[in-house]
Length: 99
Image 1 (tube, rainbow, N blue to C red):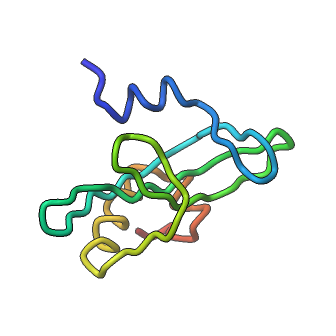
Image 2: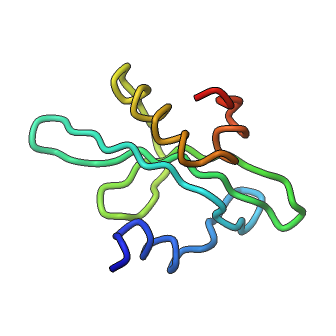
């Protein structure tokens, strides 16, 4: 059975950017919690129509990537490094090749 992330990717294969629509190539999700509030930071590798690759940091509270301030604590950065081990192209775009 597909995970929520897989379902979201299947539905939202494109993302709006200031340069127009872009295709979502990879996404790493880092769950976070503050008290009882739960949300995730997502790091997305996007490809514009002209082939340019873009990296977007966003947050999500309901499965939808939203713009806004994205803050990562030390522990979150450790989880990001681990998540990037599963997303080679995204890690390379961030220059985390040795994640």
